[in-house]
Image 1: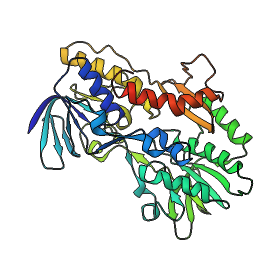
Image 2: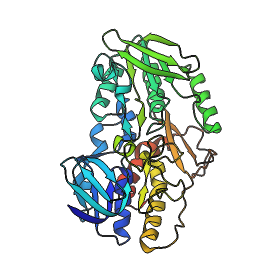
Image 3: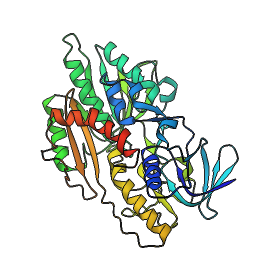
Image 4: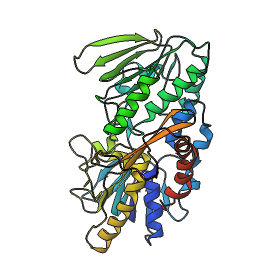
Amino acid sequence: MKKYQVVILGAGAGGLSSASRLLKSGIKDIAIIDHADQHAYQPAWPLVGSGEEKKTRTVKSMSRVIPKTIDHIQQRVTRIQPVERKVYLDNDDFIMYEYLVVALGIQLDFQEIEGLEATLGRNGVTTNYLYDYTDYTYELLKQTKTGNVIITKPKSVIKGGVAPENTLFTFDEFIRDQKDNKAHLIFKSGKDTLFPVEKYRRYMEEHLNNKHIEYQLNQELIKVDGDKKEATFKEWATGETYTLPFSMIVVTPPMSAPDVVKNSTLSDEQGWLDVNPFTLQHVRHQNVFGIGDCTNLPTIKMGAAVRKQMPVLVSNLLSQIKGKQLKAHYDGSTACPIATEYGQAFIAEFGYDMKPKESMPIDQGKTNPLLYQVKKRGIPLMYWNALLKGKA
């Protein structure tokens, strides 16, 4: 058994950036618990699936991104006991803490779609949410010349909230650029709107209509039969189900809070880490803070949100350690870069009030080659060299 002043659960963007910032702020006794040996920049995976990025560029070993003076405990977290201030691990050991930062990300629930796990990675069934399948996505895209190419998005909260749309628009251009390609692109979303911010919703709708992309809302993927190459959808409005044939289907699975959070006393009724939306402090345990996808913060789950959350969390955690009032305030800021074609993108940027909050001196709701380069090169550069080092 070991005890640390600060224990951070998860070595994703939220965990690593918070650890680095705390270290720079004078907190030396820190441990990060994460079973993985690699860290991935996952927002690039839709571009890998569209042939615009190499997946090897999206990962680095944990030893390269975790500061040397921070202990990396390479185990899975199996249980959190906030009253006892203990975190239990899958090797039957436990770690004690004075302060806890929960940054465990989100859980991919592939099992919620009948038949999906049995056929994923073959029979034209793929996803851009797992590193191992992104190359298969691109191989399918190049091979598919006829039939339905279906892109799905669930009703549930998801990370990388516009990843399906990035896939959709770049696939559309890829198909159009091949004169002999007769594939039919279809977007099926379980949500009741294209986007929660009206300005960007209108722009998304305009793009879909101008490109003549077939799309339907309130349509949830519930079953995949890989052998028959059929996908079954449920229409939320009526409860009716129907089946579509496909040549290729790119699945965004339903997602939820990690089971270890759901099964703890730290969760809300839906299973998410229950934090104050402005201070990021847990609502019942003052020595616990949360960041990123595992929390119940009412904003779209994006890396850009973590970038804005991290300074608030670190400032308030330091105040809590010193016994001072928590003054830092998170306003829900996030950003969603959407590639509307190869070389063009727009960036939706907003806060809790769901009103545009754009940070660049141009209209970010209009496609622009500059915004595409910001998405493809600028943001990853900032991610690896600033955010993960606690500088963003």
